[in-house]
Amino acid sequence: MLDWRGHVAEATSANVFFVKDRTLHTPLPDCFLNGITRQTVIELAGALDYQVVERTILPTELSDFEECFLTGTAAEITPVRSIDEQRYRPGNACREFIAAYTATVNAG
Image (cartoon, rainbow, N blue to C red; front, side, top):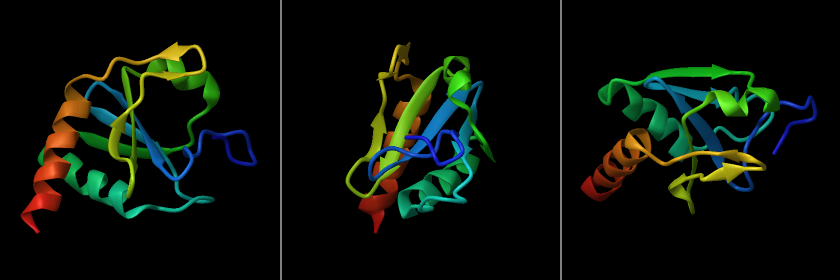
């Protein structure tokens, strides 16, 4: 979904992350919920040796990314295969974050 400015914002009931070169790109939570699962992924990124960049993401940038995943209470971490015509292949980042998130929530 786009925000009122036309920037990539979130999915229905989930936050969005894009991956390129061990960097997570995620929209600034300035007009949507900064979800708990989103915050957990940002914390896990350091331990997994990923950079996190919170920034404005334009729809025209969607082809610049290698992977995409959603985060949320219901979604946990869910890989995305496509957004409109843009296709993504769930890869190492999706696997690493799913494994780290699962270990974190099951440790509690």
